[in-house]
Structure formats: structure tokens, C-alpha cells
Image (cartoon, rainbow, N blue to C red; front, top):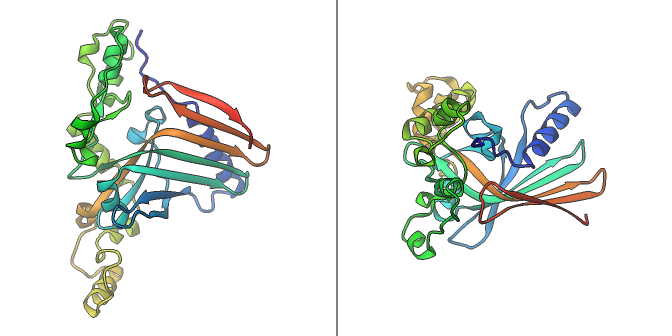
Length: 275
């Protein structure tokens, strides 16, 4: 029977850390933040900032994809268009644990849908070795359009086929455009009203002119004549397709490394290392 659940071994670790940290703080604040670093292709310097953990792609822990949201007018969005390599750091101060993630980011918005490559799954089921797309062909594609290998199937397909004993690997399909659009809308609908309002403000880091100051004041007072969904055009979700995890338990003086195997994009190695 084909397995659709390829949950990485570090996923329960992260979930437990989040739950335990929230319990230690009595859910104040009732959300989890982490630091995300991107690369500025113009300067070569990394840029780091704090973002809110928005859960798992398709609300499925077994997707193994960490998500956050951003304004398309922010620097990190433009940086991810040029370079998809990122590192994220979760630090849980009350339970004294740190998790660092390295991977490739994919943007989901009205212009971008992640290009999911599941050919390796079909070939594995058929008993063949996974093929590799040449770096030359990849270099002709923009960063965000390059396919990313992952066992992420269409949620609808997976839900409708989990009970079947026989599968035709040729029928496997990645998430559809409609499912990506629904996922984007799900994240938007999950935002608070003040957060939705922030996407209507002048572009981040634009000069604070008198005109912009007046616009911000109108938005704050709710008299700018716009509806909350008018900010959706500036909204994007970012998914981190993790390939390396460094987990440090300061309280126990233990450290573990998780690495995604290059050949089989759902197999992970777990190694205990010196802290």
C-alpha cells in the first residue's frame, strides 16, 4: 500500500517545542515567532527578521513545510524572487531549546504557485531510480519557478485514495492551481482584521511623506474608503521546504542533526552530535 504520510522526524520535535513554550508562557502571546534570513543579491549580505509561524502548508504537518506570510512589497519578497535559500531559527527561551532550519522557500500568491516535482515518487514506486534535472535546464528558469522535489501530492487526491490498496503511480498529481488558490485564501481568511489592514498601508520603507502620513491615519481610523480584502493583492504566503535541521536542547546538553537524503526526497537521517 502506498504511503501518503511522509512526516519528517523533526516535525513532532518542533510541535512539542511550540506547545511546551506556549504552555510555559500561558499562551502570552498566543503565537510563535521565529527569525528568517534571506540573501540580498545586490549586496551579498544576509537579511534577518522576525516573522510569525503560520502553521503547516495545507494545514498538514506531514507536508513538512513551515509557513509564514509577508507583504509582497517588502524586501524579503524581492530577495526570495532572486534567491530561494533561507535559514530559520526558533528559540524557545522558557524550555531552553533551539531549532535551526535550512531549506528553499517557495512563494504562494496571485502570481506564484510552487512547482512541485513528484516524478521521484512515481519512479520509486515503479522500482526505478529518481532522475535528476540538469543544472543547465534549471538555470534557464526563474528561481521561484524551478521545480522542487517533495512528496507533496494534491490534498484532494491524497484524501480520496488513502483507503485504496492498489495505485497507479502515473495518476499521482501535485496540488492543482485551484488548490493553491484556496490555500492562499485560507491563510488570508485566518488573519486578524488589523493584520489585513496592514496590507493596505503605503509600501514598507517608502518615505514618510505628508501624503503617506495622511493615508496611514485614514487607514487607522477606517475612513480610507477601502475594504479589508483590498490588501489581498499585496499578500503572500511563503513555505520553507526544509532539507536540514539543527536541534539543540540546551536544558539537556544534547544536539541532533536531521538531513534530507538527496536521492529520496522523503527519507531523513538523524544523527546525535556533540552540543
